[in-house]
Image (cartoon, rainbow, N blue to C red; front, side, top):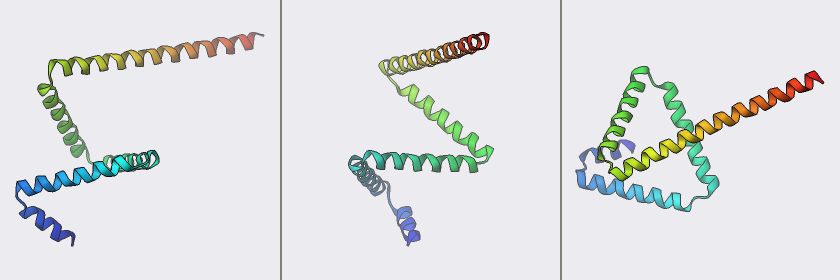
Length: 124
């Protein structure tokens, strides 16, 4: 039965193929609009597990190919983006870097405070 579906899709012209994929996308959006937070979390967890499993099984060559495709897609996206989109992307990157630095500083401060109290306890 699955083979018949594959055969049918091979014979399909581009227009019916696009229509079928569009219908599938709409059904998926409708399902996601109706799902609860718990169902969404479960779906995302399963997707993450499958992705991890695929990556664990992939060869170096497959990994390099996947990363090259990702890089190429990123380059194409950046080539097509407007000045406003570019500024927004760079602004988000800058904000993220600031937050990371703050987290590092907070972690260092926390460590220094812990060390201070540990040393004070030992001295008393």
